[in-house]
Structures are given as C-alpha cells and as structure tokens.
Length: 82
Image (tube, rainbow, N blue to C red; front, top):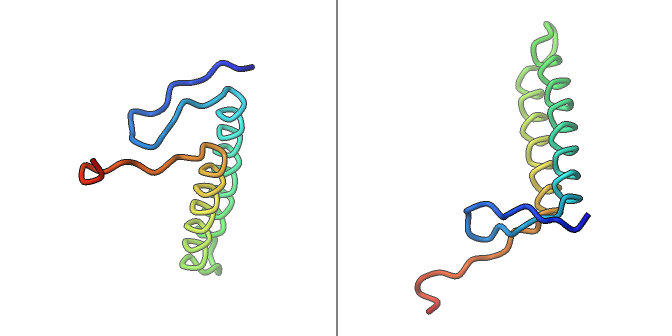
C-alpha cells in the first residue's frame, strides 16, 4: 500500500507509509510485552528490582532506536542557518 500517514507536527518527522506504521505498531506491542515481563520480575520477591529497572530502560532505549530506524526522522534547520 502506498498511502502515507501525515508526519507528526514536529520538525524532522515526515509522512510514513502504511507498512512502516504497521512495523512500528508491532514493535510497540512487542516492547510492551517485554516491559511487562521485566515488571513481573521486578515485583517478584527475591529478585533485584534495580536490575529489572535497568532492563526496562534498556528495552525502552532499544525499541526507540529500532523505531527510529524505521521512521528515520531527519535533522532540522535552525533560525541561524538562514
């Protein structure tokens, strides 16, 4: 499908194809499953909640980079560039 979603009203974000949006939506669901698994460990007695918190942060960072690889936001022009 070649239809594009409008870009976010944020500089650097562009219109995205249905396929890219579908990929990122799948990634978001996978990210949520991973975070919930880590949260379950974090709340289990005898487990180290700090390490689980670090794992959650790592999961969030990893998916952020993965989704940026898909959407490829660009750099922006600054007022002083004119």
